[in-house]
Length: 101
Length: 162
Image (cartoon, rainbow over all chains, first blue to last red; front, side, top):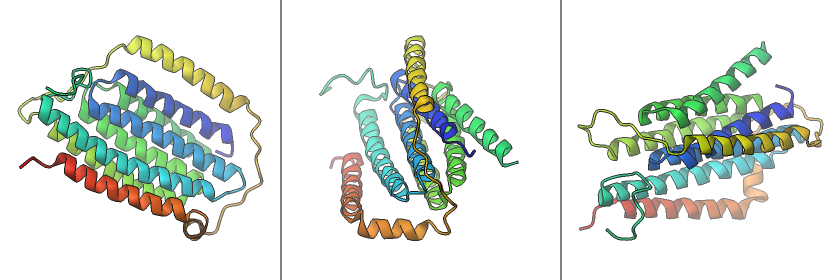
């Protein structure tokens, strides 16, 4: 726990799993979950570098901004997914390839 | 003792994150995401980021996760029993992502990061507030505009046409 690379490896595992979810999942909500994992991995990196770089608080501020972005992104993405479901009656993002139905 | 706790929490986070991307049921994925978020919160505490840990619980667990579960409920028929979803091209995806992870962790471990001496801060909230109001005032205001835009945009997108 007093070692920077532990945190970095954990965050790269989280990032890779999130990327795996984004590229293999076909459900819109599941893709969104993958994106949340990626954002969490980025935050973990920010905070790890903040702590081991002499407790630099700028990293915390950046992590706060990432959380704000994640909240805004989740709200808008779910609105779009619900719209897709109302229009196409599916949220399989491979089936949604037309601009109009 | 702290070491054991750290490794236990790390293992919990990684395993639950694996369940998030591999579970057959969408609802199980959402509940595993809850465990992942809480594990990451505990890692924040290990990194002396107490304020960020609380924000993570409030925003992610209390906000985003509830929103995601709402999304699952609203985009599935109540009558359909299994809220399941499929994955495509799992093998190719796994190979590509494993290669990517190998490269990423190789860089992470082998780079000689500069580490400065640090000590546990007495308070983090005060310094975050100072930075937000002095050094990062413009991004702070921009974030407030972004949240306003997301609020209006999400409401406009999801309401029914009259």
